[in-house]
Image 1: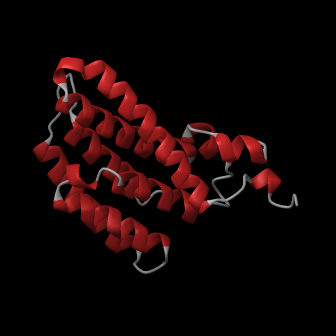
Image 2: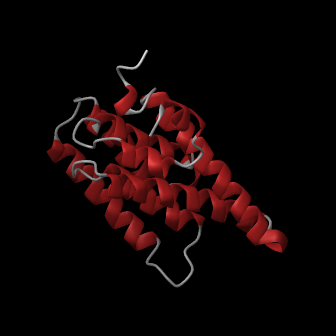
Length: 168
């Protein structure tokens, strides 16, 4: 990905895939958490705590055992509150995004994009649920806006793509 492509991209997927995960663990973890913070109002308290713990873990402020415990509590609450059905709603997508963003596993493109995607779908569902007469239109508009916002978040964490770091 060129610097120009990085700067103009409105979709976080190719951006995340351009980052070597082994070099960008902290940034990828913080990106997942930042995506979830954009839908904070949709989350139960335990999921918020899990995201905060993931951020602390990224900064080396808590141990993996603490993150694992907090994530376990959040996961149990999310499953109990949102047991799943054929059409997930905004709150279910938000809880899933929080759990994906907070897992103790090393960050990979797949688990980071799962969190980002669920967060975008949560925002889209919330918009559709708020305007049921134009659900599809509101959903798609919000999903695209959320993806563009997520791309901006990633640019805030990684200013240039890794293959362009030495370019002046």
